[in-house]
Image (cartoon, rainbow, N blue to C red; front, side, top):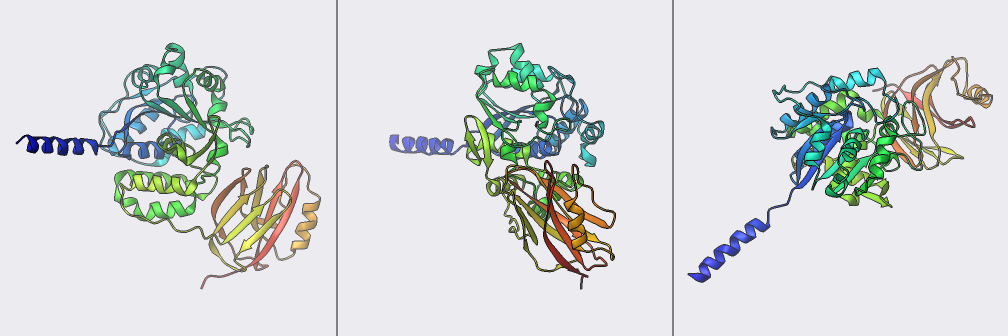
Length: 426
């Protein structure tokens, strides 16, 4: 009997030992598109315990609209026990503010409609962070006004948090702030708050643009999400957000999704001195889809662009199809240089040639302007040491071809890597 009792105890111990510990997470967010997808990911991750969501009023969204959006996303995943609170609308220092039209779009969750919830935000973000952050990882996806205010109110909080993983800053790459091309948006909105957090003594991993430039939202990821999004309500909401905001049409990156995932799996990042400089795009894409789809099987289409433009700083080369069909075309833009470059695709009218366009470009200075006889069908900029994937639409023209060009400013230089025939469908 004693042996049987011991055997039963061992079985119970084995069952208990198979339980996966859940990581306590507190999210501080300004509820942009990438914040919303990152929040859905954290809510759906089986090994995560989201303790609380603090909504920043200094970033993209206003409160309480942002808190309402967060509560609806939480309710969508079946949770009713996660407190949400609003933070200050005023940065610790300065008067930087994002454009009104951006903020209005975020307030309305970018046109995405979610099932309503009766839950309401309660208290304020600073009190919420002070109450829930001890023993938790703070996933910081917004200007750090809330967290810095909490650390100021309770200096000992820095030693109580497990760590802070924060999206923000730009080390060796240009920024993306609307008021300063050298600054990253979160840091630009409230630089003092970022400084307070960095100097607080809390264990901090920063995920700046240097790392997020490695994880563009590609058309391949979007195709997979579109195909399988019916698997879960969270995946459906994520697809609605990606679709409504054209996140996969270029110039969007998994800024906050990378930060959220790396808070759970630091190996997604290459970190030097607490600062992430690179990230693993394939693993991140797989992780996001696996969690959003509830572990159901999926496949991401392989990277097979129709056109690849590769910029080295001194050359821009074309590789890909030798002829194109009018309509959707996927362009990969690869920047192997330390400067921003732009590319464009367009058509000449019937009275001008590529030689005319090259002569025109040779005389350009300052901000390049296209001549009236060149119609641009697509254009974009690519950060240093990064890659972006853009779906574009090529058009038929009187000359029967599309011209691809690359350009830089300071100094102004233009390259013409290819003129490609374009034929009608069929």
